[in-house]
Length: 167
Ligand SMILES: *[C@@H]1O[C@H](CO)[C@@H](O)[C@H](O)[C@H]1NC(C)=O
Image (cartoon, rainbow, N blue to C red):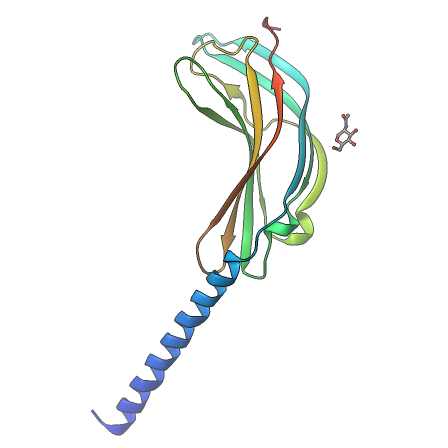
């Protein structure tokens, strides 16, 4: 190898090593970043509760939410994906999880908000098990980093009971 190529080789090796250390460091620092996410999410109204022609129960809800995900952002966060899941148990499945609403938040300044929305997605059961069913609402978030691993978090926000009869 010529002295020049040799020196270039050393330089590139050093640069790659440095980058690897920086990435590991960024990811490592994230381990010490424990977010204190706050959220209040409640069902304001059951807009629709019926059995579809296919035999599956279908529910449309209005949610009142007050969410503060600012603490899920660190300097190493690219964006945060947040969703509200309805979680419940049936005889058929021990765990059912259905996303009702979601959002991609791309900066900290938009991570705190209050809103009342009709759920983006219908709650559709595999079957007709929802009359009188107790359902938990859980806020989940996935913090996608610039470098390092994705950080997953969740907090239960509220529970509600569906009507005993279709509307
Ligand atoms: C919605 O939630 C906020 C905060 O959690 C609360 O102050 C407000 O009264 C709620 N609105 C309704 C209509 O329940």
